[in-house]
Structure formats: C-alpha cells, structure tokens
Length: 355
Ligand SMILES: Cc1cc2nc3c(=O)[nH]c(=O)nc-3n(C[C@H](O)[C@H](O)[C@H](O)COP(=O)(O)OP(=O)(O)OC[C@H]3O[C@@H](n4cnc5c(N)ncnc54)[C@H](O)[C@@H]3O)c2cc1C
Image (cartoon, rainbow, N blue to C red; front, side, top):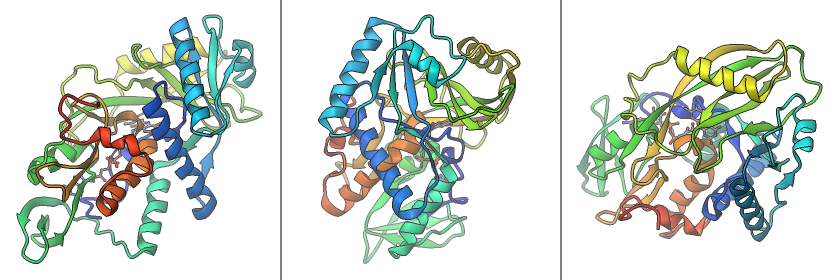
C-alpha cells in the first residue's frame, strides 16, 4: 500500500462510521449485506470494536413504505435476518423523544451499527501485514512509467519507484487526480459534508439506534447516531451530488459553516424535540461521489486490466469499501468479483453508468 500520508488520512477518518443493510434497491442491499458480514468477521476474528446500536429509516409516505417492503424482500432472499417494518410508536420507544407524528412506519435493523474509521483501517492493515503485505507511508504516487520486468513503474514522492504488476487506484477524494496520472479516468464530484455534535440533557440509560430521515430519491435529510451516553453526532445526508463544484481534497473548508450548522441543528432539534439539547460544530469532510452516475467505480479498465479502480464511494464508503474492496482483490486474483458478483456493473469505463 503506497500512502502519501498515513493510514486513514482521508475521508475514512471523517466518517460517521455507519454501516447498515437498509438500502432501498436490491443491488445496494447486497453490497451492504456482504459488507456487514465482513464487519461481523472483523469483530469476531480480529477484535474490531463494533457498536451495534441498530439503524432505522423513517418512512413518511406510501413510496417509502413500498421501498421498505422491497428492501425486506431482498434481505430475506439473501438469507439474513430481515429488517423489521415497525410502527411509529415502536420507533419512539426505541428512541425516546423521537417525533413520529409524520411517520407511517420505520425500517429497523437491530444488527446494524457503526464502526470507527481509523480503527477499521488499522485492523485491515494488521490483516494485510499478517499475509505479507506492506504499507509505505509518506509515499505519494506522482507518476506512472512502463516497467521492465514488471508492467508498471510507479514513481513516488521521494524520487524512488515501486514496480507493480497491478495498480489499484484507491485514493478516495484524490482518486480523480491519481486516475489522471495513471491514464485511467476516475471522475469524481467531491462534495463537502458537515457534522455536528449534539449534547443530550441527560445521559441515555441504554443505546439508541441511528435515525436516518434520508430516503433515496428525496432531498438531503438529517441523520443522527449515538456517540456516547450523552452525545449524538449527526448531519445532512444524500447519495446524490448537489451540482456544486467538486472540492479540492487538499484545500477544502475545514470549519462547519454557520448556515449548515443552523439548518442541521434546527432539523435534528425538530426530529428530537427534547428540552435542553446543545449543539456544537464537529467537522467537515468529503464524500467522493462517482461522477458517472453517483455509484462507485470498481474493477479493471478495458484498455489495461492491470489498472484497477476502487473509488467513488460517496457517503457510504466505510461500509461499501469492505465488500467492494474485497471485490477489487477478486478482480485482481480471479478476474471477476465474487463477494458481490453484480459488482461487475460498477466497472469504471461502463458506458452511461450502472447497467
Ligand atoms: C462527514 C462524513 C460522514 C460520512 N459518514 C459515513 C458513514 O456513516 N458510513 C460510511 O460508510 N461512509 C461514510 N462516509 C463516507 C466515507 O468516509 C468515504 O466514502 C470513505 O472513507 C472513502 O474511503 P477511501 O478509502 O476511498 O478514501 P480515503 O479514506 O480518503 O483514503 C484515500 C487515501 O489515499 C491517499 N492518497 C491520496 N493521493 C495519493 C497518492 N497520490 N499516492 C498515495 N496515496 C494517496 C490519501 O492520503 C488517503 O489516505 C462519510 C464521509 C464524510 C465526509
């Protein structure tokens, strides 16, 4: 692994860390189910700390309800314990104080939760090292040359080089730039997202599930999840790019704007109208959204299958990176994705987007 800075130097350290199986289309449900299986294995076999608080999406229309029913059917087909479609009163029992007067039903999975980005990257690195993998930190890839014995010669920042049979571009919000120097396009829209921290008036007696208002197809909406007994973190989420210009990953704004702070605080406060909530800005970070159609770009390029894309993971990459990252390895070793076979729809030079 050639890393220009240190492990978890990019978006992975800025993530809310949420993983869940509550997507609303079959392909994405499968990616999430396989990722969650990897979370379970990392916890079981490698001691990754997992907060399994549960995850719920709030349905406020008949369309939402239909999407929830489709998600549950797909989860059943994949053989996992399906999410429950719960009554608003049950959602409020799970999250005391939650406003549910506009909620028809919630999609709730008790086995979902969140993981820490840097801890997860650290565990993955330990596994790689135990199999002979090596990390070179402070080693930025700056150029690609044709190698002699091996196919590629990567020139790195200090003027040295590394030879490789296969090159994987997993540079997060920098992946478009790295794609350019590899001659393998990975167009991105890097979108700024902001998070805030919410202080509860009293510590919670028990863990509460993450609450997600956002439903694909609708506008940006809020989410919040428990961070410790007296704090939540939250923000506004969407899978889609807003149309704003792509942010520069080296110079994007690091402070939460007053506008977005007030909007998110007001909307979280409206969903959780508990007296005495306190709000503070937390952080900003980039969603590296695949510019082709909003979906990730994963797999080999047609013009040179020894260059492999692993990017465009948007606001779900800590979770998706687990199963789709394994698919990348499978592309390299087996010539096909096996963990999520349908991931061949995500090839980076697919014509008009996901087929
Ligand atoms: C506010 C926020 C909340 C989020 N919440 C969630 C969530 O709840 N759940 C979820 O699943 N996802 C979430 N995400 C999305 C998730 O964080 C990203 O999709 C994911 O971290 C992308 O991972 P990555 O490995 O592709 O990129 P990164 O983690 O950015 O890693 C890319 C790495 O490439 C290195 N690099 C760059 N250029 C070079 C070069 N030339 N040579 C060598 N190395 C280079 C960088 O230093 C960096 O370490 C969130 C993101 C944000 C910003």
